[in-house]
Amino acid sequence: MNKLRNAGIIGTGSCLPDKIVTNRDMEEIVDTTDEWINTRTGISERRMTDENTATSDLATVAARRALENAGLSPEEIDLILVATVTPDVMFPSTACIVQDNIGAINAAAFDLEAACSGFLYGLAVAENFIKTGYYRNIMVIGAEALTKIIDFTDRNTCVLFGDGAGAAIVSEVPEGYGILSTYIGADGKGGKLLTVPAGGSRIPSSVESVQNRLHYVKMDGKEVFKFAVKIMGDAAEKALEKCGLDKEDIDFLIPHQANRRIIDASVKRLKMPNEKVYINLDKYGNMSSASVAVAIDEASRKGLLKDGDTIVLVGFGGGLTWGSAVLKWKSIGRN
Image (cartoon, rainbow, N blue to C red; front, side):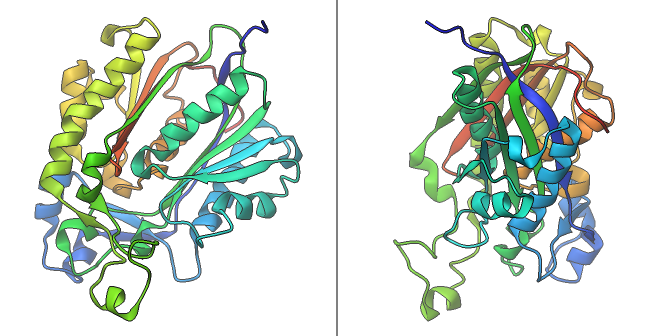
């Protein structure tokens, strides 16, 4: 039997739209206040794409930056996996569009949809392709243009989300480093708590579906909050258990950036000091599948992730879904 390889991240990149929408700007759009948003979410501003920018545009820039960071050419990528709930079109996949944009002519490509857990689902898929030797270099991208599916008359959702993309290249790494464990899960019973009702085969696009605003995000905020507070801690502990580690072994935590109160509850449960937790929620809001991916890239480029650090990634999303990963960090690429 062939020995399994060690899979890890060897390069990262991210892309954020230039346009910044502050809470003060939101006050002009919907009945809300900066204080109301900040107190309940921890968000101060978010990024927004313009009318000519799609998810693949953000993903393409993030992918190119990850390639540069890893010192790889596009031709060396074997698979492109894009996690998104805002694809450019129903098909072809956003991954195929990115493949063409960056010239990754040797890569297979497909999209993966697990909402805000998407990047962590993608990391789990990539880990196993690398460990078995099926592929050598995999590009995992979390990318979203969420402001295009947000109802700006619904103050409970429109203040939460922002646009962005993050990419990570997963390849073989030296023994003792890389992805120590991944853990993903789902509970389809909670699917209706966070959804875009129309546009699929259940409720096809129609004049009526548009008039009824069914192509926008709908969320039961209270129920999602209760689910998230519990599952973030559960998922992190499960991934640690899978690789024989405990909460005390964590050097750095990168959680999904959905709500500051959810993050604080997870931090308290894992007994992490605040300086060991990466938070950019205040600047970007909830970027769904891009959230953890962008955070890893920023933390790495800022030098916050040290060689040999035990890093925990954790998130949750619509589906309902959740995911986590434990990494032994190996310093990567060029800033």
